[in-house]
Image (cartoon, rainbow, N blue to C red; front, side, top):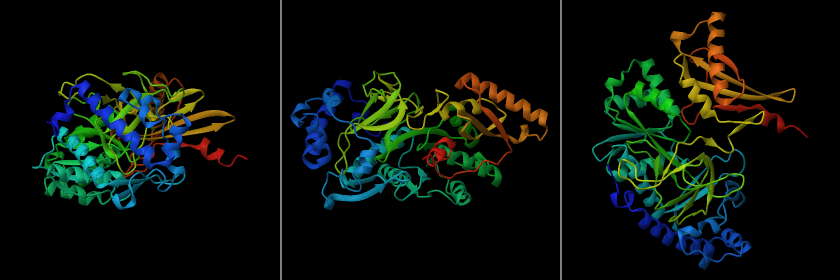
Length: 438
């Protein structure tokens, strides 16, 4: 299913010409309207006329989240205030929030891209779709909401919280699609069990999930428990919000809406571009955004790009699943460890629930890692022999994957805190302690 076949199946050379035209216009636009970018380009001895095609994008400066915070609140805004019709913001837990302004055209483009995602997930005007992302300053709720309305489907703005009522509406209204974080989908599945609601009572066929990394094992777990198919959606507020890329039925990478968001993969240390297929840091340039466009925004997400026509017929470049974030990667005794690696191991073993916590610490100047994991009810026992056997089994498989020994702590079913938004998976006590070191 296609929402915009002309764009989604556009020949590669034609797409690159379109990207080049839009990049040329974008560079002149930000040079004329954003002093931050004008100074950046002047410092590089770069003029707008030096950008003639999409191949020239590597001449342009990078943008980081710190740049957005340093220019808080409106320093990177390009459009005049009277053209801004909506403002979103990040949480700002580690400094100033990132403020992002949208023009009416930006909102329309955003809805268009989310519509492509929903259509790829088999949603159309005949469906009822509940949005379980948070509404408000977070881009998830309203981003999906406008996309659902754009395809003509009925939207149920459930947001997060009040899960029992949401499940009742899913059953009674025969809701066919939903959008949520994978963590919240898992919470919905658990609540279904508690309420005695069978997946056969629901009409759900598709779930559009994102806002946090998730593994194939997590996908299969939720699909089996809820009787639907899960599709990945990717986005970030600094670029636009959800809808930057999306999965089709083939689920071999997420198709990027590259007529609006140009992707690159760079080495996060050398900042040099990497070829298709190599993993590195994902970078986006917003080719058409008016309110707050960004040049070569460093997302910190680690993935690779996939070229070639997909079996579904789409020609857009795809991005692989997110392995992790360059700033969330745990370096333990010199070894790089991503939480997604640990999740994959846990979900490959039938004894464990997909509920875990990773606690990193430093004892006597040596990094330590503990993996706390819930055991499924049918495998849980207070017998120390059984517990020791489970610990040994998981610890051995973890060491074979992450190459270091982790302390495994077996947790009783239901004992790890549940989250209705993004889950907290990692506690790094080394960072907490460092805050108090003079």
